[in-house]
Image (tube, rainbow, N blue to C red; front, side):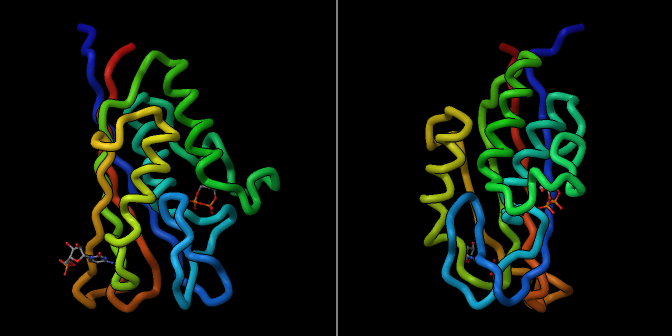
Amino acid sequence: MTVPFRVGQGFDVHALVEGRPLILGGVTIPHTHGLKGHSDADALLHAITDALLGAAGLGDIGRHFPDTDPTYKGADSRVLLRAAYAKVQESGWQAVNVDATIHAQAPKIMPHAPAMVANIASDLGLPEDCVNVKGKTNEHLGYLGRKEGIAATVVVLLAKG
Ligand SMILES: Nc1ccn([C@@H]2O[C@H](COP(=O)(O)O)[C@@H](O)[C@H]2O)c(=O)n1
Ligand SMILES: C[C@@]1(CO)OP(=O)(O)OP(=O)(O)OC[C@H]1O
């Protein structure tokens, strides 16, 4: 049976360190710490990329953009997102909507959410009302609550064609 819809979920987390910019959803957010990674460490865009690839049955971000490949050192995760989505589209799927949560004890996410939504909608060719970004603290619990990192969780829906 051919089903015309697919759901995908994504998760990513990166450590917060001094001396790095904090980039989420392609937006540079003023903060004391930034995210550590091989690329620009944009946990939100990585989780979206994984959700899209997962829904299409195309594996994960590390399979397509290995963190052992110097090509991706310092990479702009918007470039990776667009490249991954091109592969998803080539396999016959289109994104319908994206819903994301950034898990960050600090800083406040919501003031920056509209700019993130604009970037993601542009990269996926979606209307902005089909992309949603939310912020949550971790109520001071665990590694996220201690501000040791920032995580993102995402669900996407794909439609055939
Ligand atoms: N990093 C964050 C965390 C939260 N928000 C906003 O605050 C609301 C309440 O968060 P709780 O974790 O206390 O439930 C949340 O709904 C967001 O609107 C934020 O902007 N940035
Ligand atoms: C994006 C890639 C590639 O530069 O590296 P990181 O920035 O470390 O991010 P991660 O979410 O750990 O995994 C995907 C990697 O392959």
